[in-house]
Length: 248
Length: 233
Image (tube, rainbow over all chains, first blue to last red; front, side, top):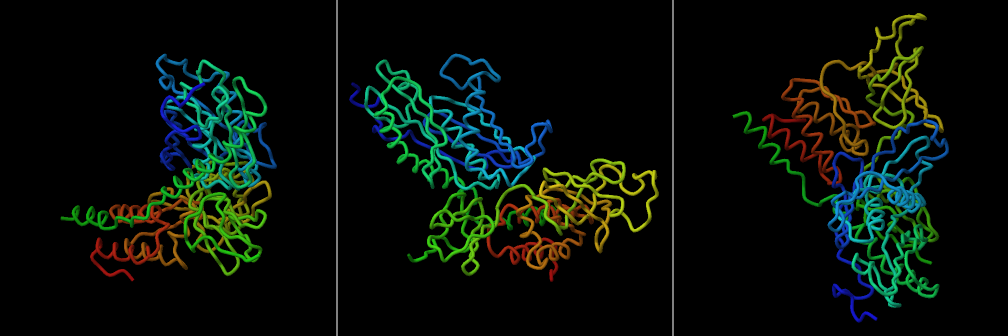
């Protein structure tokens, strides 16, 4: 049994998190979420015109996620670029994780496109992607009843751990990785997957631990959105200088 | 149970944030009740109006509403009307009856009135539940726009650019000697001397970027007076 985590973290300590909003000016909303060495950029376009028309839903809008890992993002070997079965699946679970909070009935016949790109991946990418996407959706001004915060939990030889990294995921003994997404206000779980070896008791304990820690992730997301609107005053003087100098 | 307010007027709130607890407060636009709390459902500035809580959005695409004055672009000529792009996800239709005070004969070349890529100031006359939009250019101040420049701002910043009873936009007009039309959909048309157009553009962009700050009207007044070197009423 492992005595300590290989990087010195506590069992219930996530990797360092950096989150930002509004990192892609061209998009309607964007988010950046970095947890350890997993880095996600999310860009939201929409609600916008939806083609093809046969996919329209006249009662509610549609949310469409695109998950993509850059070929250079993995550890060493170059990944095969472009869509693949895994990306397609994760795109789908991300849609399911995000759509319960987004009030899509406000936008009938339209689509909200959420593009999530990964420049660096070291386990927990779908969780980082969901966190970045939630920031981006809020930044785009889309009505949503709450954020979605996401984090992986699991166990290493029976010890409950939070936010497994790449090394831990490939641990030689018994290991389970459980990506989890939670709506902070209600505690509802919108994503729950599992990969590895475990027993039901461990899973329940891991989820319980994860729910507490995920509140911290939600707080980081909230702060990222607040920092988007800085308190510093507008630089009128600098702008005025541009004009008065041009005149001379 | 006692009711308690958790936010200050004009503070920035994010989706899901608790604005107040207790049943004495009422949710309005951009907020909702969840059990005993009132929470924000969009990113915005909190506004407390007595017991009513709402949020003013800081971002988001334009959603057409009846009565809005907007700047649209003709995107297509139809059988009996025009399709108008309002910088939103829903297309608007300008019908023949709403296009002109003249009688437009059947089979007439509609591009004589409005051609593709023409910009016009129009009013949203109808929005259905499925967000089908009708617009009209019949009415005071509604017209085709010629000359000048067109640019986009975030539609949620438009109220700030227009100001209370038009105070901000009037000041920009006077300060820059430009004709300025700010559509509710975030499309802005500016016409005047090229240098002054540029000044109006920079001023509006600065207001857009810092719309969450208080006291902008006074700052804009001082800025325009400094640049133009004359008093702006």
